[in-house]
Picture 1 (cartoon, rainbow, N blue to C red):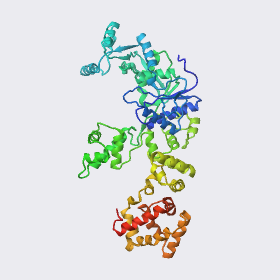
Picture 2: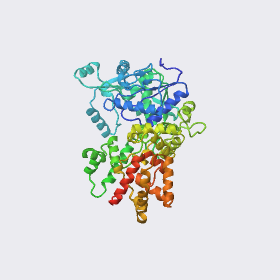
Picture 3: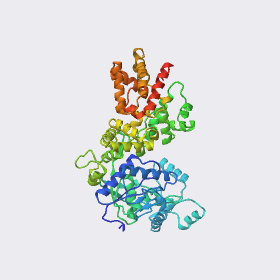
Picture 4: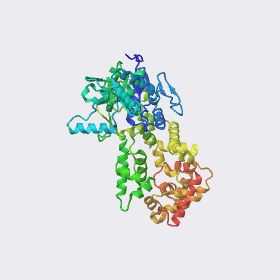
Length: 567
């Protein structure tokens, strides 16, 4: 029996800190949190950082930050409010970092060694590879043969250790059929003949995933394991370890995988594929060279070539090439969705319904509702399809439902993280107007920045749409230019610069000239924005401010006088 196991439901999310939090991992965390909440239980965040080469403190901070952003709170684990999550931990079953639990794992390994349920194996990687090759050539199974390791005497093993020979510890899998009673998939049986004696302690003294996860779940009293279906084939190994350690296993529920709409598995490699295709298309243009592309992306030719030849899927290279070629990478990690301007509540709503159906078939589920109604029986078996169009619509709905003040606050926070130039260019009162203008049409928090880029462009560098210039400014014997020349002195003399005063003054000018508002408004719009699409004209002028509006009209007229308006 497990002395730490109680009737209280205890779930956990145990990511490896090797990068940003994947959307699939986020859904796993969300379901574990929701199940604990709905059952009145506890939810643990545990960091599985025994991969010394790939695990980083920075990745841990990213994972903690992304979980907090989603609103997923844990009862035990790294302190979510600490600047360094390794420094402070909350809960009674820590430490919650596997790298800090090595002595615990070694004690459990020793127990199995003493009972001869595990053994030390001294084969080198080269010896193992040669042995597997011989087995393949002989038509045998490509799996580990324990005979040599099991035949070693204690004296022989001691001599090898004294010589400094590295070794691992393997678990001796008993001959039986392992039955997984999965709460989603039903009964799954796997014979021990499908499982080789697996490593539980590596040569560097660190435990493998299989061993550490079982020991941690035992000592932390985990009652329910909800994880992705890719872990299903690992479960027999874990059941064998529970049996060897004489502890009842937790209940298992393996969640459906998340696929792209085309049926492919949603993977971080999707970014590399899109960036690689865009780079190859760019290089197909006449005269384009890998050196030019590398320079445009601020990469080395070696790194670019390695990426194009599929010898690397590095995310930073994919991002650099995407920016250089002007393509948008698919969002895969939670950080990607944050950068793209999604609201956390919209993402939580979408993830909650990705493979799970509430009893009342609700389409809007916030975190509080999910915590009340979550039921494992609502999880389906089939892979879930991640529909970005549907998520985008969900996010747009969430934005429209925000009070104006709340949207402004959210937009300011988003810009502080990703578009600080807007906060520098737009004082608070103008920013509120900016936010109000874009809320109704925004699908994401990023869209106002994309569509309103002209607000923060340097006046002298404002880019004009050639088609808009020809149609609005130069047509009919430069009628638009004449309207700007008539309007400029009136705006220069305007004492109060506000939406109301601008509307009155421009209306007066159109009346005096005997033209409709469009004859004056459109040239003015092109002069201050470079194009024909902006928020309402008077609000646009108010946001830019008097000094910049006048400056842009003057620059537009000067360029036209020099024949430089079209850029």
